[in-house]
Image (cartoon, rainbow, N blue to C red):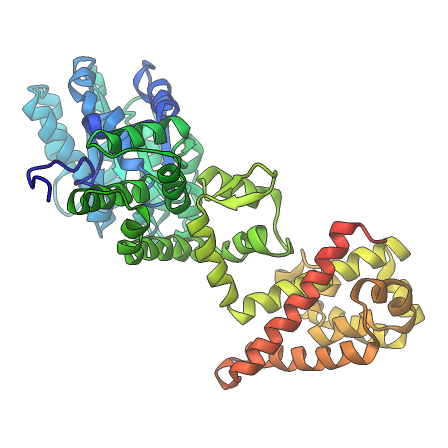
Length: 504
């Protein structure tokens, strides 16, 4: 047994990383320097990234650890955790009180600032009057040749704090936009400010005054510093250790810190390096982190797109969706030029989820794929007026599209951007595919088999689709779910293979 007075360099993982513990992020530090610190008039900056990616640590390193230097330049940084507030009015008042207290400690107060603070905090003021006085408080600070920087940590909480209240975002915007009382903001959040505003249903132009900086996974230089820290306690770092750590963590800072802590603990207890054992001991913590990440992606409505990119058939994925995942670091391009998750352990986790994916998601993807296939092939054969021409050749098609027109007419205000085929039932889509002439010449070469084969699948999937649409999914047997999922994936794979091969 080795000495018990050893120091684990990762013992404080889960906290803000500061001082010599902070590694990497050279480019991100340069962004903060050029946007916020160096200019005479600083600009607002939004730091965006996954939970545990190091947003708060980055800002702490760039700003708080240089506080004395900034104060010497008459630039006062103030850190506020937005999650501590459940009332927007109290939050705006706290902007005043926190700033006033810091000015007092620095002996930067004068009579006009003191008077402005007292007036801003008077009780029973309307929002307009109270906010106007807050503006005047910061105006007096500007007139004393001081600049204020508010770091608004956990800014995702604004979706709750300002829910349905556009004045919250507009109030922050005005504090920073007008030069008379301008303050500077750095926000840290998982989502963009624009996305947060959408979730509050209170759209403003606050997002428009920010430079956005996405914080992704550690680059290679940072992981080298990480392994150097491991080796500093006597651990021998070879290619096997590197590969195992990369398999579990990729470049995710939180996971690297957590695994590093356990590797060191295991090393001192057993006097050997065992990455696999350390990872197994942390399995629950890893899965908890993955669950949090997936919950956020689901909440954004993008989880099925991530699964499509990694494992499936790109039914409704756009390049902008892929770009977003790349910016967050959730995806990366491998040596083969294809996309993979930031770590193979996370990719394995996603693969397990993909096998248990909500049947509604699979059905939706399958329906989208069929609609796209029909539209694409009919446009190629008949041109832009394909619906009219198809109706002229087949009475069943005419019945289907007449019904679709009625549905679209009934919901004019909400359906103007939808195509007529979007109103067709799933069973209608199969009817269009199985029109004799279209089936023989177009769809049979893609789907294969014969018409009875697809009629059976059409009837079964339509029944399942109807049950889900009417919330009877609890009445479905597990074998029915499995069969439906298998049919959907069969269709998706056939369509995907056709698009990949370029079959005419």
